[in-house]
Image (cartoon, rainbow, N blue to C red; front, side, top):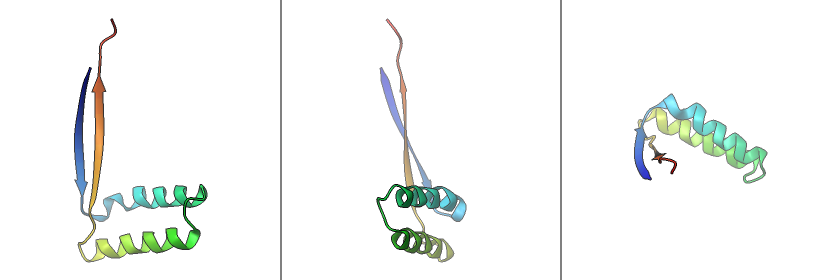
Amino acid sequence: MTVEVHTGVFTGAVMLPLISGLAEAACSGGAVTRRQADRWIAEQQARTEVDRFFLALPMFMAAATAR
């Protein structure tokens, strides 16, 4: 078996829909309140406006052969 990790680094607003969706899911699941989710999303939006947004997204790839 082989496992590799590749980390995507994003610094612009292109990933805002993804992280907003994650915050919405956390809110829907009861992990955070609506107010917490809204404040966090607003903070991330503000970060993109002043070029301070950073997202590192590790992606794992595994490959194996059946015996």
